[in-house]
Length: 451
Image (tube, rainbow, N blue to C red):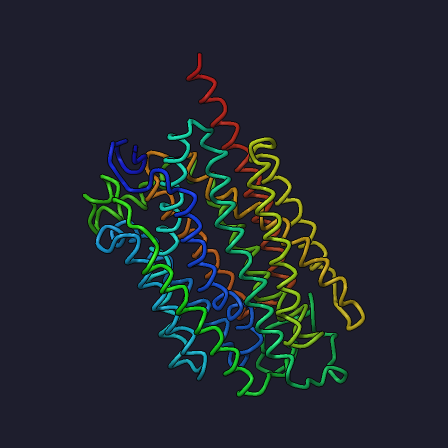
């Protein structure tokens, strides 16, 4: 088959041909197991580890170090290979889950940094692995490349978003064992009025935390999922050859390739659009879970609401991957952006009350429908627009998302929810405008080549 990544197109036997869909199912199952634990823990960090902003600070460190690891991802993959990179990632996830048994700055921050350092290669490996299988399948079956990329990314992100259901149901069912006093909680500082801790202690919500034994039970279950993901990857995931560029690269090449790729006008103008894909998730993971769910309905409700989000995202990813060849990516991206804009405006003006629980579920489900579109189409977009420099393009993609997460988590320590929502709305508008410009430019270039 042809490896379409790197500086040149090269012919090489990979062991992928004929097994493309099966390979994607295997990597999907591995991510499903590990991220069942991780995403549920991530959703709880801002509520579970409130003291001195430990939860948000740990997420800031994690995503800050993803920036560095994303830049070096091509070189790390060259040294380790895709399979070994993933196995080391799963070990890091196991250590991260263990650190939550005794969450302090001395335990949670080092494991967050370690996880950040391997997450760049992990996500770049995932992207390249699926793209390799997609190109192989499209070539073998003489099928449309965009449709094949959408289909295989749809399989992966269907499994990936299922983790929002399994992980969050585990967390809520376990945490629901405890009794919480929610009747005496004031909701006036919840929702859009929620602010970080001030020197006077005002303007912030306080969330009742569960018993330690209950948290330990939840973490033990998550550890089992982490180990299952490691074993699935070790036993069943095939290795694939590195591209010619990756085999020849070193640390300097990785850094130069990552930064020089930004000089590509298409990638440069896509950066705000990529940023919003991260920032809308950051709003969900931190502000929505803490300010709109835990603050009003209790921490035990986070999992149930996020499970409904995961269910909607799973269905959306599955459907989107199938209809993409009919609708095209423009319609899907436009729909996802419109959904997010509507949600951000609602969050900006809404102070939830205990009798509005249904509305929280409606917002979560609607958010999930848009997220399924973002997830399936974003990887396909990068693979289609940058086939000649896929590793560097995906490294920039994940680096940009990590930087956006980091910026959002850092400002979360200092500014109120309303201010953050204004920032996100501005980035969404700017990113959408620039994305349209990129698509117009690509279409003009394609039309010129046909003449």
